[in-house]
Image (cartoon, rainbow, N blue to C red; front, side):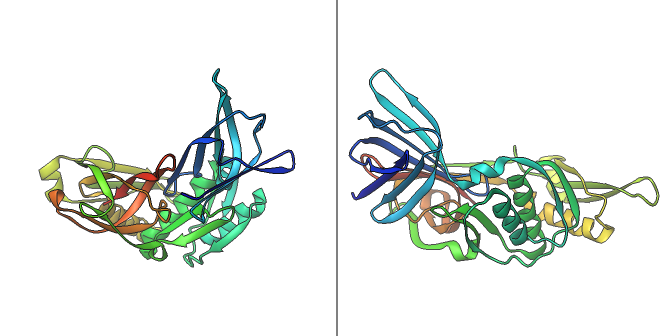
Length: 314
């Protein structure tokens, strides 16, 4: 195990890997910033909020971010929580989306918060004009990513890559990796559900400024309703949606949500390449799994040995 753990305190850089007792790194797919939690024994080094933390494991860049929480106990063990740059993008604002793509929105966000930029893939799709009020920058961009997926079939991941904000096409995050019965995994939990995020009728409404009434768009799967009962998704659209756009969105939402939700959690030996948004090949005979899977969230534990727990999208 080769661990490099650097902390910048009061303008000086300290290497503290010998002091560190535990290290946990958590990353979620399009769901906020990544998080590094670690504990160390107090050796007259006082880490403070705002300090910069850099963590490498076996020469791989794992985390670059900023301290947001510091706590300690009677035994002089200090616990620290640090987040990457995306933590700052939880700020709410009023944002006008006009002639924008996801890429231009991410650019604007980085410029506004003075964040370092990395690879920002051009998503090309022009988003509908809207005024986003009292929403976080992250939520606006995640919604834009979902809209882009709906209309183009291409999926993107916003993340911080060791101190640089990146926007990646998921197709470029595929790993040459197999996890399952015979490879690295030592436990799993599998579930099938219609309790959350399952809908077989989509109802969209939008205010029609010309008629002064609400236009209603409904699409449904009668076979699915007969099998599971009526489970309806409802959304009020921005008034800029026209009927054809609303129909396309309703049909796309039905395709997306009209299926049983499967969840799979894996416990595996660690691989530093695995991040949220990356994909690998999953093989578990008991549940008939033999396909490529996208990582929804992953937590790596590095001490005393490197293991990881991941939730995947099926």
